[in-house]
Amino acid sequence: MSLPAVLNIALGLFFVYLLLSLFVSDIQELLSTLFWDSRAKSLYGSICSILGEKMAEFLYTHPLIKSLKDYKVERGKNFIGPSYIPNNIFAIALIDNILEQSSVNSNIANLQSEQFIEALNSSPIQQILPLEVIKLFKVLSVRAELKQNGFSSYLEALEAEIMSWFSQAMDRTSGVYKRQVKRKTLFLGFLFAVVLNADTLNIATRLYKEPFLQVQLVQEINQFYQGQTSPSSDESVEPSEQQFSSGPTQDLSRLIVNFSSLPLGWSRENLNEQFDLKQEFTPTTGELKAGEISFEIAQAILGWILTAIAISMGASFWFDLLKKIINVRNTGEQ
Image (cartoon, rainbow, N blue to C red):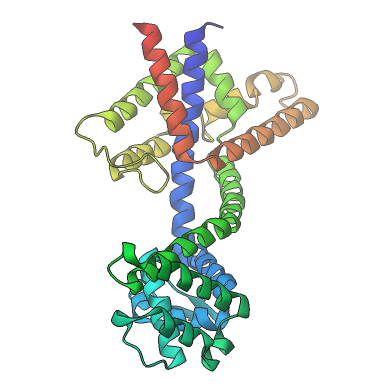
């Protein structure tokens, strides 16, 4: 097999993976927003783990946090809040909550280190915040006081310390959410691989056996890639699952519906090639050879699993690979 043919097959596979990754990502985001609320639940759980449930409940009632919520739903005891809280909003809302719950007579704009420590030592805060969190905030208060000269006020220095701590805490706890998303993506990826009959082994085989299909698909890919890299496109938009512009998504949706340009789907032509039905169908008996068709079904399942794993890698991963292959291919043609 020549190098151009190998590159064409790789382009075709990577493009199908990119297409399905975007499609599954959109579906997963929609389901997450409408039914799972996984982002909001994960964020609330993370804040409960670092502040305790009582302070998390008080924090979520603060006007700054409530203003971030796209919606507020109560289902039994499950509370759904914002999917994202900016570090500065979290810091100022937390400081304000600590002062309010402690009943320390202090204007937040003129807050001093002694007043914040007094609020942390108050009886109400001792009942709301875990002891280790109180000790942590005392350390952050001391650090803010030492760095106060670099800021316009102690409040600004304390806010910066809490923002840094919160950002690091979210980085550590985000692994749980990422693993949950990975499992859901694998499940949805396999589901859509079956629904769309996106069999990796069949796609690679058809691209290898049908040079015309290679050329047709490469033309589609070049049109898509030129649309992404044209000077008129928004260069600030990163090619990721959540940041693709609406144009490419519409183009990809069109390709999903139009299976004729892609080696997938449940059309008779694709099934004949995938399961080799023309050879397996005996003219004398009109029956399929059970042993061989069972092997081909197992092979199709393996192909769907491979597609699901590829989808879980994400659209940005496949877009980057697609871009590299196109650059290599274009360089070789010059």
